[in-house]
Structure formats: C-alpha cells, structure tokens
Length: 108
Image 1: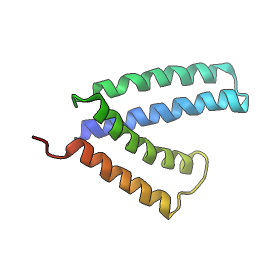
Image 2: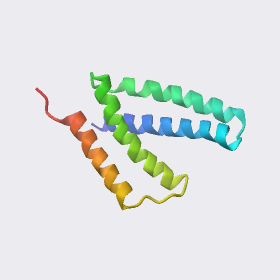
Image 3: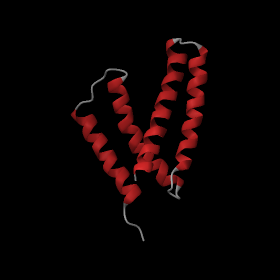
Image 4: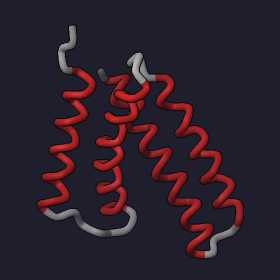
C-alpha cells in the first residue's frame, strides 16, 4: 500500500509541477526552458501510473483523480498562498474516501 501511495503522490506532483512550469512559461513570460522542463516532467507523469500494480487503467486513473484534487489544494496553499477553507478540506476528504473505495474495496 505504501508503494501505491508513493506512486500516486509522485505522479500528482509531476503533473502539477510540470503543468505549473508550462503555466509560468506561457502565462507569465518565463524563459522557454520552463516550458521544456515542464513538458518533460509531464511525460514522466504519463509513465508513472503504469508502475502501479493494479490491472485496470480506469481504476488507477479514477483513483489518481482524487489524489490529484488533494495535491492541487495543497499546491495552491503552499505555492500560490491560497489557504484552503473548510469546504476544500471536506471535498478532499470525500475524494480520499472515494479513492480508497475504488482501490481497496473487496472484489470477488
């Protein structure tokens, strides 16, 4: 389970970080190497989920969506300095519950 969680975190940070670098390049006029670095990180993001042990692409990406939401809230808090409110945390908790059900519910 730790391996699974670490891969989800690494994938999420790769997607958000890569996207953020592309954002800075295109929206805030940063040098083109920001866009190149961000693009390479986004390719890495595309590879990381394939390392998951779950056999279903759909379940992995559905679960990743919940993790991405939580990481996006944390990114906004840490990088953009926008503190999450009660409803951000409540929504994030609901997402994590959903991710847990998708990944670890007993199936026959």
